[in-house]
Image 1 (cartoon, rainbow, N blue to C red):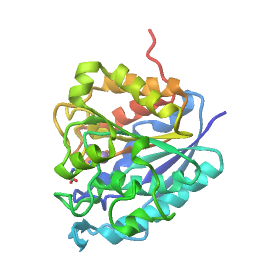
Image 2: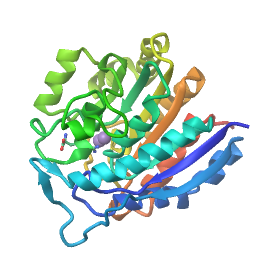
Image 3: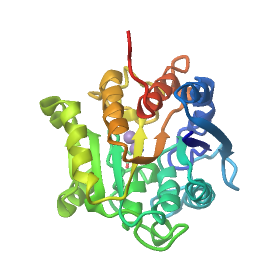
Image 4: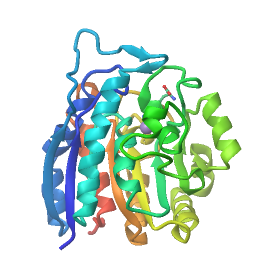
Length: 303
Ligand SMILES: NC(=[NH2+])NCCC[C@H](N)C(=O)O
Ligand SMILES: [Mn+2]
Ligand SMILES: [Mn+2]
């Protein structure tokens, strides 16, 4: 039976809103383990990682390094997460990392990448998360993890856990984009990153887009990591998230997208991030996160 490790990445240091560190438990309470074990997986919940830094409720957002919010907290957390993800892959298990804000992808990719010659990444998100401290309008590190993993940004972020670049920009595909900062647009152009905006998705349809993403990565990569930010979906679907952007994907499109990835048999790890139960409506966003994971792991709608 395929073994799946659930890793709770209980962090909120990558952005200023409290509560996203509760995302992993909100997803658990929405029934994740049972849903996935009913699909035939052997589920091992490794519990939550939160690192050595405590959340400071009174002063959560500290710019420690120039334009990098909660810098030490983010780094420390990601060292712990990278180790846990690394151990999961070494054990031959599929790591499913529940967030937590998207800065956790620095750690998950750091733990994953050494296991692959050429790791591919599908970044399913409203945002590119391709800023560095110079291009970021906010200083929030959850807007920077993909850049850091591609080797751009503060050297302590770039070299976290293992020295050097974790993912090559030519092995990245962006899906769902509709809120890119100027510096991110320039990085995408300069590096020729395969990018599907919401306009592209409306024109081509999500099925064609996902099939193109898979065929682009299939032959040149030896594993594909899916980093899924719930704000890729429209805020009507997933209101419980810190940086919602109108004009997003529907749940049914995302179910279809996950089904295409399931059929590709190429996805080797996943982040499921930015669920903030304090911003949610009766845990609806966590419930959708479970539904999304279920489709990645083979759930099919039947009648
Ligand atoms: N993972 C996220 N939700 N990222 C949002 C990033 C928003 C904006 N681009 C920034 O850098 O501040
Ligand atoms: Mn996002
Ligand atoms: Mn994101």
